[in-house]
Image 1: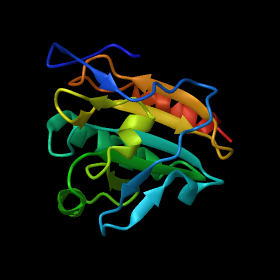
Image 2 (image 1 turned 135 degrees about the horizontal axis):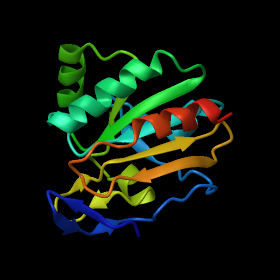
Image 3 (image 1 turned 60 degrees about the horizontal axis):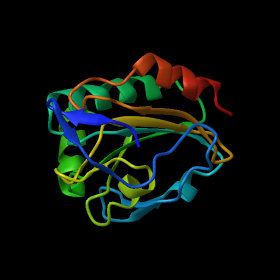
Length: 166
């Protein structure tokens, strides 16, 4: 498993680590209206999945805003931000932040995404900051498990991976 710290403290990641070349694991998360969202819902598109511990924190806010800005420039790419925040909080945050190119989805109910992608921080019941790019054929083409949960991901590498994926 990837080695991750949060505020300098080691955390235990629960689930299965995903690697480039793997078939993307399926998951079910909740949209802001509580409807289910699955990987299969976006089949045929490249997916950039941005994972954040909580949308209401500075780095998570900046990460979501950055990918929202970039999403407007990406053709045939669906951008999802996954956290364990409640769907109601995500909806409120998106409205206040003017987010309209990224779909925020909640993994609070089952940790389905977090366990499938190996990003559940057991000690905190939050998701570890990470980014995944999945091509239109459901193959993982880019993975970043950010080693320190309060650091930013490599935005440029993730965006380039999304542009290169077919």
